[in-house]
Structure formats: C-alpha cells, structure tokens
Length: 451
Image: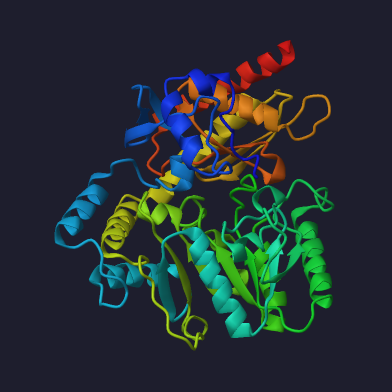
C-alpha cells in the first residue's frame, strides 16, 4: 500500500460532514483505495481553476484531478463537444469507423515528432504503458525492460512490474525482467555532487554496465522525462539523448512516458522528451491524463513498423470512443489556440520563483524544483534532513484548510508536495496559491516545533 495518500481513519473522518459517505466508501471499496485528508471531501463541481465541495467550500485547485484537468474545469468548448456528441451517439467501438478518433489521431501523430506515426487509443495511462510494453517486447522478441529508479508507470500487472518505486509496487511478480538504471533524480544518489555533464556521463556508464549484465536482447528503455509520482524529479536536459545513442547501438527502443509531462505542461516543450532530442525522437510515446480534461483517454504513438508488429487481431472496446475523442479534440484545439504551453512557461516560472522565495530559510524544505506548471516541494526533518512524509501530510492538510488543493508524492516516502494546476492558471491565481501554500508551510512548521 502506498503512503502517497492520507488515509482518513482518524476521529475527524468519523465525525466530519462527509462521515456518512466516507463510511459507505470504506464498507464497499477496497482498503487500499485511499483518499486524501483526515476529513475526506466530496468535490461536487468546478469552474476554471476552482472546485467546490458538498459543503459549499471553494478551493483553488493546484492538482487538477492528478494532472488530468489540463485546461480548466467546465471548459465550455469541451462540455459543448461532449453534449453534442452525446446527442448523436455515445459508443460504437473500434470495430467501426470513428471520425472523431481519426481526427484526433491525425492531430496527435503530427504533434508527436515520430516519423510515420500510428496512434492507438486506450482509456488510461496504465493501459497505454501496458500496450507500449506489449509492442516493444513483441518487436524485439525480448521480455527485458530497462526502467528508471524511482519511476511509476501504472497499476496493471505489467506496469507494476517495471515501477521503480516500492510504495506503488505491491508485488514482486512480473512477466518482465526489469533492470533499473540511474539518472532520473538529479539531487540525490551517488552522482548528486557531479556537474550536469559529469552526471550524464556517469549515468551513461551505469547504463552500459547494466546492459553488460543483460541476457541477449533488451526490448526497451521506458522513462518519464519528469517523474510524476516520484516527486517531479528530472535529469539534466540531454540525458535521454545520451542514453539514446547507447540504445541505438543495441537496437533497443526508447519509450517516453508522457502521461504527466505531455501537452505543454513543462512550459519549455510540448513533450517532455523534447528536452532530450539531440539523438532524435523516441520510438514509442505514451500519453493520457490531460488530453481528455477529465475524460478517460490514453494512448500510444509509435512508428509504423513498431505499431504494426503485432500478428494477432485486437480491438479497443472503449479506447477511442466517439464521446471521449470529441472531448479530446476540443480540448487540444483550445490548448493550442490559446497557447497554454506558453502560459505554463510564463506563469509556471513566476510560481516556482515565488515558492522558492517563500521557502527560503525554511529548514523543513529541502528543495523547490520543477518546470512549467509541474512543481515539487520536498519536505524534510529539520534536524536530520531525512524525508518527512509527516511534514508533507501536515502541509497538505493546512493548505486545504486555507482553500488550496495540492498533491503528494516523492518516491516510497511521499515527502514531496506536488503542484500541477490547470495550464490556464492566471498570474493572480498563482500569487494567491503561493500565498496560501507559504502560510501552510509556516503553520505546519510551527505546529511541528510546538510538538
């Protein structure tokens, strides 16, 4: 079970305004399906960058349904597209021609940067990564996968097997042999004290060493350009380009997991892999979350030879459904037409600097990191410097009390606050959220000092 969530099992949860609903939740849903906050909240509606709970409390949303509400809550273009498509037909499956699916696939193929791209739609990022692993292992005729330490790629049996984060990996059983390499966490580990150039060289040497221990072919390297659940950590720009040179010599495919980094969230680039494009595009790209703005859309992009390597029939019953594709196309059009990538770069840059200033001098904060609107604040114990999941949980609660919703993550110890608002965030909202979070950080620090 992961520590990335707060289990509402205390007195507050039992007596709070949502106690009855929470009791029903616990009675019928799995124990490991945990919720945030000691007094769990029921979100009933949203607009723009704000949501409301069942008691009428208004919150500034800096987590967007786990980086999924990418543009805005109740975006008129998306709700209109859903309504109009629902009035025609909700579902047909991929056994029939689906115009919205073809329209969106054409847009994504063109944006992907992968030559002669083919697109396969799924319903989630987990399913997208699962499909990518199927493609890579079939194409290479190997079940060996390279993955990054501290990584997360989903909750299915195959994706759990390549996840390099014990808090999200409930079993050691796997159909794959996974070899883990260094590089995704810049400021910790054996290479932390090196310069960026030396860091990349050391990680490449580690990759070469790992490949020397593999048995025959390796199918692929799968990597998040910025690790999501891992705490918004990332390597120096160019690391995966250097990896790509090594992989190419061995015929190994590069899978970029863009479930959280895609669609311009990092500000500087539309895809996270573009910070590492010195050796060309990836072979396979996976996406999900933000493209649907809350609708269930995931998918895989791959070059035609890789995508077409399967020699058995397949369909996707719900992947590519007319209603989700209509929503995704409307959402993507809005994102591009309003340059939300540029907004993520501008407003995200302001927000991260505002947070760094707010955290300066706080001995409970080790680091504020990120790019665009993908920002992590790592919490530590003041005396020991060890990760502090308790501190992160306290700030999460205090921020909620102040009217701000954020997330948590950061490896197996969940000591990182995750900040990822919709990409339409305004400067005023960034300032407001930073002020609430600063007050929460100081309140949690005072509370821990008093205890």
